[in-house]
Image 1 (tube, helix red, strand yellow):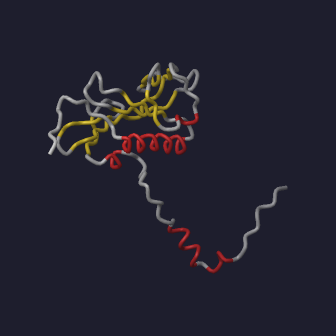
Image 2 (image 1 turned 135 degrees about the vertical axis):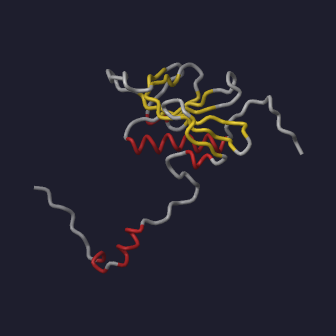
Image 3 (image 1 turned 45 degrees about the vertical axis):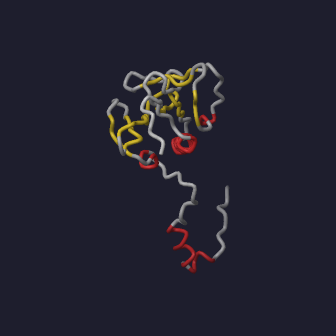
Length: 164
């Protein structure tokens, strides 16, 4: 049985990176604006972490916001980048949403850090740290759909609205 190497940096698995990237994509769709997720290298801290942030709009007042810079030469932005075409070296001033860092604490692989820098959640299951359930299984049917199937009125064809 291999023994853990406590000197090795903690890094996200490819499945974890995929889930984090899909979370940024889902947040982009939900918020209607780009959400960037940048993985920060473990070189300095000994563990990787990912920051979620929204690029500020031109002339947006950021005085009351917690901001971070995302991007730069060699940055690792995951997901589809909210539709932005980011070139290597591009840097975005962003509103910080939250971060997830890796941990070597027994039973705690992930720690969520809020905009105040406080550790607000701990888990060994990444999906519990994210705002969307991103499993590989299709979502269950909506209850409304089931009710519509039981409603005889739903069998009647509907007419599209008439534009005047």
